[in-house]
Length: 589
Image (tube, rainbow, N blue to C red):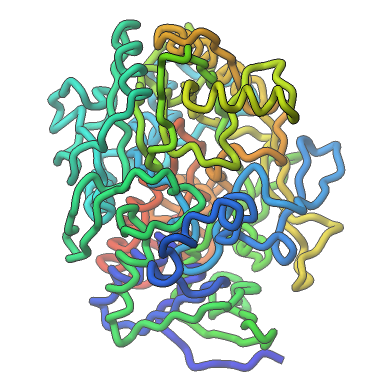
């Protein structure tokens, strides 16, 4: 029997970037705010201090900062005719756990999505007509445009101290920045990071081929910086231990030292860690949330009443919680009805490994999470879909995020996987290898979705969420087409051997690819094909809001954290300026 606790005004389920931003922004309302986090507390000191912080085995291989799949996992299959089996080890993606979530162990890559990404259907149809959209593809507008989100992108970039170079200031294109980006009101808060030799080679090659290179936008601060909230960042050390690690210098933006301490100053805010939410409770109508049931570290069950519930966990966790709670109609691929679980997407990526002669030293061990050079010439709507033969695209770039000793062992094809020859090849190529990568988009499809598994259950007795996903024809064409562009750039960089690579086809959940899971609770203007409205408010249960990449109708050729952060500020504004003044549906269904 659950112990019933005193009610709160606002309940946050999950405490990473989005939960931290909303808690900070709602502090001025005077409402009682509670955040429930399934993992434990964290702080830079002592959790990310040298030398223990750079333990590659502990953090990168054994995934100490990640979700424990012995307690919470999912089942996977490529298509509905197969039997899904549980993911017993983390592989393709690495959801975080604990205060800060994946915002602690991310690389710091902080993009704005292109205007096309926010209006993929309307802009594609306007340019090419309906005929270009393949059967079964769910191409959908967000319901909120880039222009509407631009001030919130700007706010998130300033919160994170993003280092970069603008390419479109108020409509004026600026050489050296991303000339394909949507117009921005302000320059990045910090200048770009120092460039590497690999980045310089990529930049020269891209220019030679007629493309438009620019430095990667990075939440790794290029200098000491104080953000608008008064939080001071250290300068990036280029240590190469960003992804899967915390930052000892507070140079990589993370919610645990930025937005969360500000939220904690609010006397009406409370954080409870080791609190795993089982389900959101609904009233007898099923149209109003009354709170949640959660279990603490001792296994005790509590009922936490709340007037407003914000699902601010990782994308997959939000969708699972909606399915367990009966929030929204589950998606059925047979009848093509329902909304929760619809339009699951991933990242369809490819690229090339570039091997250089022994006179070309890359020094890849000196890196930062988002240190590199990119082109957007083949991303979003920046090129001719009909000519290329696919919809979407990818951001192409060369990055230097750190060549750590256990996991970075580049060797050419034909090299033995162990023994003396492998060791010689490792020594020969460690300093003389680079990369060109396509971070490819993924358009939603009727056959790719999330639902509840009829067989397997988690440690709490809930059915596991089931993922049905594969790279279909559009994404396979995109990976192959942009793979050729990557190889061309690699050769222009001076590579003596350019080895193409791609995500596994059919998709495999085993090797790591990216933690960029999107969709399942998508936003839109039509409640028949979207789970939440333009303010990320659940159509069917108006006092529940959903944050994170699960609301993206399709995935872009970029990392998702920038729009995730912008949407969190957008939601917080909608709550303060609209919902709290008059609770109820913000958009008529």
